Image 1 (tube, rainbow, N blue to C red):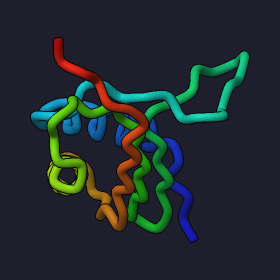
Image 2: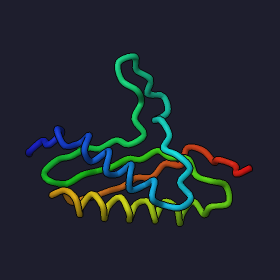
Image 3: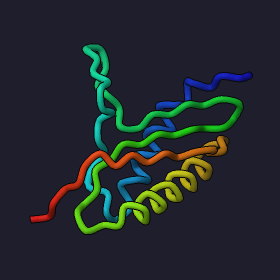
Length: 104
């Protein structure tokens, strides 16, 4: 088993940018319950093994957006962009909607 963890930060950045391009994404959210004095909690977590990536994303959505449609659109955008830019195949993109932002 090959561990390519040195590329995880790069994939996190690519995934974050791809998610923000989707209409309905208000912001990325911190991972709940993961507070550390050394590092800020990350809204995107990546695990890379054997040239495949598993991505967990935590985000906030605008009110009035269909959450299942938003999650699908983000999954597709993240998978497409990561596979286009890197050599890794995306095996999973797990979307966790942490909150709803009300437009005023």
